[in-house]
Image 1 (cartoon, rainbow over the protein chains, first blue to last red):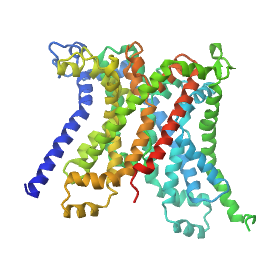
Image 2 (cartoon, chains in turn orange, red):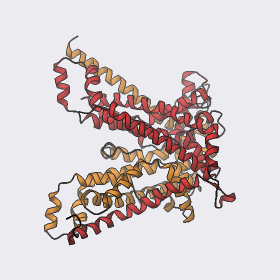
Image 3 (cartoon, helix red, strand yellow):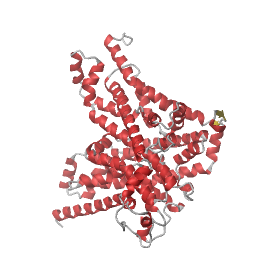
Image 4 (cartoon, helix red, strand yellow):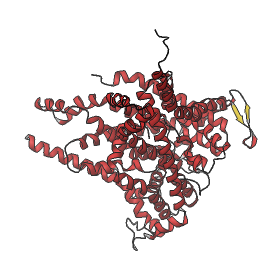
Length: 279
Length: 296
């Protein structure tokens, strides 16, 4: 066999494996959508078993689920939680990251080692006291309660510190000569240059908050105040055997992030690759 | 010379530095460091009736947790889950990453598809898989003309949950592998081709050793992720499921005691056991790093 045939054969094998894997990855998504547009009788029919809906695709199932399970509220709660967590995380992390990466001050190393230690502790150990604090503050069933554990981020601080360290030294020196103080240098010169790290952190924070299940289940037990993830868990407990309804809810819960992902794919993939955070 | 007084400039810098780290440090102390000690304290307490106050009970919770067969079973369940999720998730992702790193057409579409589960809420993902696994109406049994109790037979339920885990993390591992692969200089492969090394030879002699730092990082983060798994078990396994006992992870047991039953002291103790377990695993991983990872 000459090299050209061998290369072509290799390519064919790779495509076949990739396509089979892609098919496997898509089956749950396809089945979710196909069930969502069936009637319940079609969904639970076994003899015959239907892959596709038989009496038209019932897209109106989505509208019904949207209304009857108050998805507007779930979307709003999730969005608010993500918004405040991203803003708080980016703000506190960029400041601390700059100080740790570029400034010299006594106690810096000890403080930074605290940041590193936090990253190594499994987060489950924080949950009971965090819950008790939120409960004492009267923040159960509020956005503040949802945002609470995500106000600061050790991981983000580390990420931004690395970002600031990567910037060239002379930038700041030039600005220092022009009579800028440290705050002005930070705001006008340094912060804008770490945009890609900030985007990584923002995406990471948003994804983490969106996917989290335990915290919203604990602090927001009321379905009018909870997030999409916890809302789904509640729905499954109550209406678990109405399969088209369940699948339509699942589609509604995953669609926004999928749309955002498809649009900002490059940033997502780069963000995950550079941050390498634990999701 | 060391005791030299700070210059005005150095003092200014110190003030700015502390001002900038203050919000983060305060947050970490209140939200993370205080809770660590508080959890340890609570593990020696019993939650009073009606959730009021803590009664110091000494090591009673530890005795109860360590004596409960449930603790050891859930720890074993968690390890079994990790044994499926981590190796399969890593090996499949590595193969896909190597393929996608070749100059093939359409790689971005494949990459998008593989990464898709990563942007979905596990709650939704688990719901869909639960429906796929449904014994009577589910897709799998009806396509296979089988009657397998995927998630209620204790002998296979842990594998079924593991499969969901693998499906969920492949894309994430793959993205990390691709970025690791792109850092391997192309010259290595060119030289190997000239020497007549085949693709598979190159994979084992160049890719695997040079990629080992990335692989180690992925294995370590995924291992810790797998040992703290909760969402999949919680969403897929009903409270009435007969296989629950043989599948529930240790974090699931923690959740049940601390938040469903309201026994915070017992829950805190389980967390401490989990943290000690993870520390041991991390320590072993760090020791293994020196022998497993290829250093230039």
